[in-house]
Length: 275
Image (cartoon, rainbow, N blue to C red; front, side, top):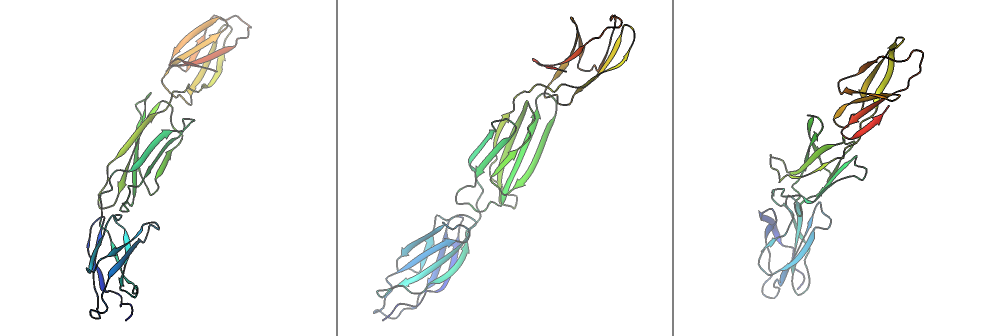
């Protein structure tokens, strides 16, 4: 009497998104050589640590459960008698699709310098159906009417939005995609960048002058970073205010043959920037 022959006709007869049921036949050699039990083992073809084993009784069917969805498994069965284990019979089977579900460990935060928005997440446990992730974000610049929406696709589990605009609300949403127009649930987060003072006027130049007058012209700041309220021009002890649409001024009643230093100040909320 020796070990038994491997099980015959091993095949998967039913699969779900978390289980595989297998069946087989066994050639027996009479009551003096009975099957004591069967040794079942399985391993994922994509997840090295996704393995398992079990001892089954003499029934020629077994259900392997607690498996990952959309995953190909190699399943082996060995017959066991009083002498030992037979060689293995091998079959392959893939678990069924499963809804992507919620992403786990979803996190988002502004970077320390406030210039980047970092978002990260993890795949749902025991679900390999997800082909990738749809990431969408909305940029709402709070000091203008500018609203921008962008969608992108990634296979990674992290994403960084760089070079953020000051005083702007960002909303980022991520959803798992398994194809066939089947998606999980959106998970979203938002953050608002801080205000920053505007840049100085791009230029301030004297364009003409007379005996007692000077004409000045300037350009708006290249970086407004918020609502530009207006300008304040100072020379000596005198000050003159201008609206945000003004880009020139004629200064009258100046002293002949006198040097004047002009300073143009941008007013933005409570911030002041000199030029």
